[in-house]
Length: 145
Length: 145
Length: 145
Image 1 (cartoon, rainbow over the protein chains, first blue to last red):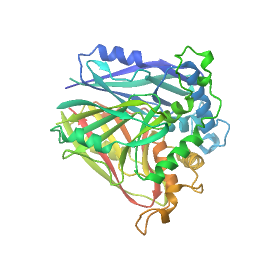
Image 2 (cartoon, rainbow over the protein chains, first blue to last red):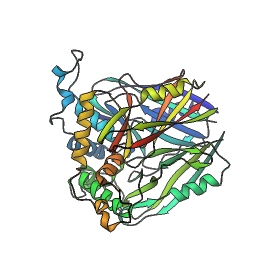
Image 3 (cartoon, rainbow over the protein chains, first blue to last red):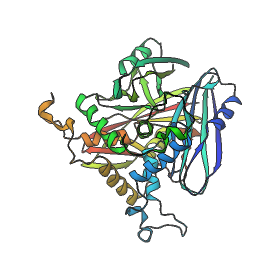
């Protein structure tokens, strides 16, 4: 049984943007000798998130519209009253980003079979920046034998 | 440490329908000798999803209404403009199904104790078909000792 | 490879309330000799749930408002027609709580590196009571070497 930990570094764009990270994960997996087991994908920020779904450009635009409808940036949020909180001068106005993150996923576990991610035909691992631009990290743990 | 991979085959019904899969998973678990560990349940399609909740028929109808309220099928979605995409002739109009899937779960990990799923009293593993009817597969990985 | 299972007991408050459980999980992890691996956090009720996000009091109030907007308690739900179901006399009116739970998470897997949870700077493990007050349990499995 081996456990291998890696970090993926990502420079994101302003606002909401979606990064396809399957190929980075596959590269990490292939560099190990693990043939059977699983990959844990863990989003390490409170305004980023994960989903496993179709990498189709127009659908990814629909997802942004959907998240903005669920948690509109312009709604009033207590978290955005920065004058009532003890915050650094560059604290962002981003309650909506946190809510979107909680609607999506923080951790996803993907089975590994024959040294490959056992994803379905149309499944891609999608990393959501919900309050960019930022330098972000994504944790990958490959576990198996 | 053993890692055992199985696929559950499911024929789904038209539209949104919810399948109780706990007994299939228990059958797979019982056929192994694993007493302590976990079961990874992984939905392998971009318009199916998972939840672990109560198997109560009226609640399952409420969930369908809830998902349709969050992502109405009749809203305008870019993904549904098939004439602007390179798609096969049988491509479905299903942006809403993808959005529902991202709101629910793709992967769930359930602890195994004394050879049994350590689910709470009212918890069932629910597989959501969000764009049926289709032939679907659900990946089950039992891991432990 | 070790697998250690523990239960956290929680007495919750009325209605929706959010409990910060990171320190309980860290205490369980530290009591093991596991340095590399993962912690599975599993919510064992159909009206409780998990999220990994920022422990900021005003944001946690925003999340409650958000969940109540998505699944209003006062909407009509089939699950709440108790006279049409076979239920015990103390059955709660809580369809909205189930829907909120399905929008959040039931299972989260957190990597462990150097004997510590590899959470990001602002990440806390949050346990959501969505239909309190109750005595609740949270399952923790530490797995690794």
